[in-house]
Image (cartoon, rainbow, N blue to C red; front, top):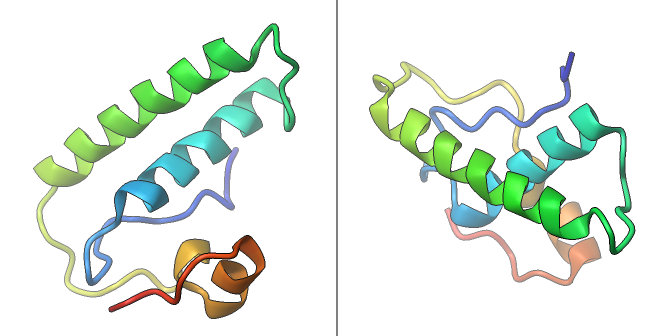
Length: 92
């Protein structure tokens, strides 16, 4: 269903809070079909994002280590994406 969801397990350094929350938001946008929620559904979507992020953190903490990093670099670690979003360069 969501082949473009960012793979977070095995990253070095480990996935950041921003990366986990961004992946949770991406999942919620995908399953709801709502890219830009209107004010009547935004609180429910944000609550769902926070719940999914918490579940993701717990899941990643409980999984065994990977032998290697994921094949692709997560978007929030890519210099062009960080620049476009006005974020500081990612420190590895």
